[in-house]
Amino acid sequence: MLPEELPEVGEPLPAFNLRLFTEEIKREHFAEAFRDLREYTARMAADYRSTPVGLKSFLGNIVFNLITLLGNMDYDAADLDEAKYGFFREIEEAQDARAALFLLESFLLKAEAKIAEHAGQTGGANMKKLLAYIDEHYAEPLSLTGLGRYFHFNPSYLSSYFATHNKEGFSEYLNKIRVSRAEELLREGEISISEISGRVGYSDPGYFTKVFKKQTGLSPSQYRRQHGAGR
Image (cartoon, rainbow, N blue to C red):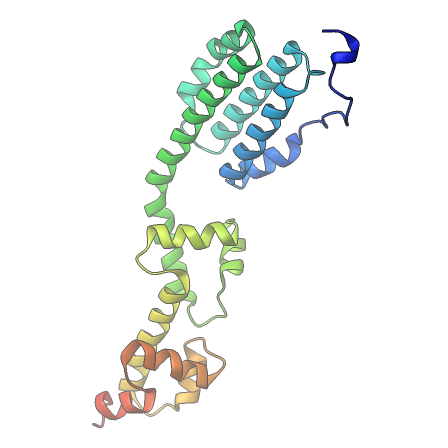
């Protein structure tokens, strides 16, 4: 290619943000981390200033780091670890950037399968811990943000995780637990509805009444008249 046929020189490709990639993996934001990696390697392969040696070295380092991270996070990455040297050799022998990227994609698909397998194994146990915590702390001002901080989950991930592993979403489940406890208190005695509202986690009695009626079909006062101890 003649010099005048080279593409116009633009901004050089910045270094890959390995720190951010590592943080995303540690937080189990795998979709975001792999998306960023795929986008970066595609740009790197398309940049005529990138050398084949540089691309191959980068891919080898990323694979090594990812296997190490998954192992440290208790994912079953033993077979990936055993196969890594063969994978490094295949990258070195790749004929061009496209072949090297194909190998990376093959590896990422295997890693994603491991991640999915792990999620299936641990999802039930983690869900039980979450539900047990809510059952014990339902009267407190619980939120996805607070639960995420406590269980080291991203709040948006926790929301989708809850919906995937439980028949109700977080808010629906919390309201169900609170209303169930309120029903017990309404049946047991003459505690004021306002006090019951506070005891089960609602600071606003009006909102408590609205939620209660939506779930039971009765207002708290109607429920007490029909099911209370002195009925």
